[in-house]
Amino acid sequence: MMGYYILIGAIALVSWLVSRKLKSKFKFYSKVHLKNGMSGAEIAEKMLSDHGIRDVKVVSTPGMLTDHYNPKNKTVNLSEGVYNQRNASAAAVAAHECGHAVQHAQAYEWLGMRSKLVPIVSVTSSMSMWVVFGGLVLGGAAGIGLGYWVAVAGLVMMGLATLFSFVTLPVEYDASNRALAWLKNKNVVTPEEYKGSEDALKWAARTYLVAAIGSLATLVYWGLQVFGGRD
Image 1 (spheres, rainbow, N blue to C red):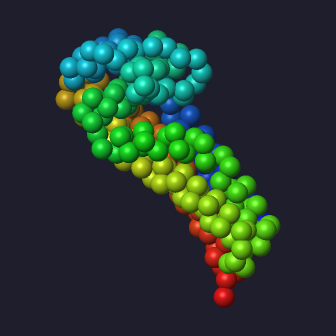
Image 2 (image 1 turned 90 degrees about the vertical axis):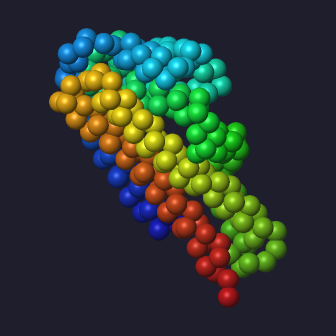
């Protein structure tokens, strides 16, 4: 178990450092005020309109960095700091979330795959480690008996969560690319503002990358515990 704690500690540290950097970037670029004077909500509404999307509503949601697109009720949810603000950070986030709405409207394959995994992962991800651990306690590392199959079932659950993390990567990167292309092509932001938006989204994407690597590392570790003890 010591190896697991070291692994989790290392992943948590890297995740914390990236998250801290992301927050500092957004704070910095929140001081780069847009010359067009548009708020995050107005930018979102314009991007949706420019893509011919009329059935998605832009709403405000409490919290910081709680922005997300909800495909079920077709809403672009912008945190209060993004919805009302008129800066490069707000422009980046608003356009990024609308990027997901565009993906949905255009039936982007990776988004569809992630949506199908959501209900499964939401149930299995929180219990997967305990299922694996329970299987090992029951003798799963020996490769025989009920314990082994319980541990394997836990690994399958964990594998689905890892798959979800990696499927999320192209979804997030593509949404950012769509956002930045629209901001640039429509001259919504100046070159200086664009650089700020681009840098902010780059660090946001890295949080998903760290999460995916961490999920894979955890899966490999527990896989070795289950299969490594077999002759």
